[in-house]
Length: 476
Image (cartoon, rainbow, N blue to C red; front, top):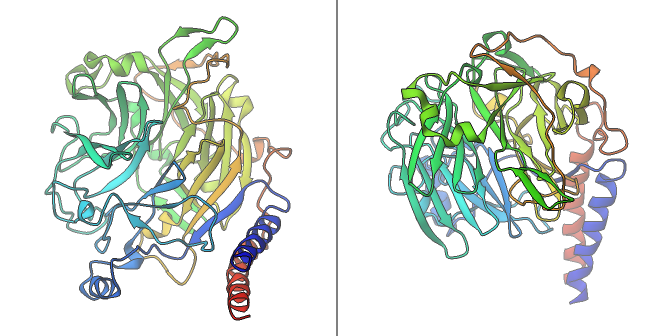
């Protein structure tokens, strides 16, 4: 037994020592392309030959941790995506590019069947193991002729019981079958808040579990800013207006000394990708169905939190009110403590042109570890992926805080007071990332060489190294 265990120990020590030598962000997984746990080699070969599986058309976009697994989404933006939802172990293993197991099954991912998953962009999982799945319904959105046969739905799936609890198909005036793009979500007790990235009818969709009803809040700040639609991620130019995408939920306002929740209302933070602004809106507004204003723009208060140095996609907030977000044009991961001024307190945690590209999604495990899914979406929108190069990375860092889903009754939280904005968002003014402080004592830049192959080569070498060690032990 020790012959099998020793190589694993050598591998883990080697990778963590080298990769973590000068930084706290660790490259824990990386893939050139996504592949799956096929039932047999015959079915794999048939999928490839028939076009059911086209590796260069599969993008890993969303990630959520639960009970020693990473659950990931592969939106069907192009053809050749056999499963749109899957998982792989979060435990250390021999592979830095694990196969993705379709979840909950191959059958539940069958393309063309509106009774199962068609196009999952993001998911969230509550502490009880209830998975909230955003299924946009229509597929092939990046192809000339998108398929729009199925409605947009929210599916609640019990992981522990392996069963569907509820399926809610959205009304056409909430999330149109032909025009919506359900993007990201957060859970707030009985309510779910969902960003609709639709090009023509963007907003925040609200779902009430108690009443099994949904509605949409629309506001100009949820639409992209034309003056911020052009930016570059490395050499790739994005020049299209992209509406609201990332969303995060702040903690309840509470005083720890009195163990008293002062206000049940919370702030929902959001930003269009085509914008440098971060905005927030009260959950009291979102929970009130009348705020949908008969499908017109909400006329009330929305807060302009402040300017970022670049555009952002995925964002996440901890139960202590710390926001983590990517800065796409700056190849950076940043943070902000929401009890302080956004303008003065943003910090760049890590900057790297090779590993930090399109920061698509964030998740926090129960040990207080933040994991970031970075990919090459900026290339994917222009054509197929180059699967001879790495396209997906998981970067992890210990932050010592829990997800927003876990209340901390001993933590006193009072959010910083922000300035309100009118129904017309302010024009974007450029802010340089060099003006933002770098958290040198916490998380530094990943130390790689100019060609970007440093840690990547170490991972590749370590995989070969462990293979040789395993072979040697098993043949002696």
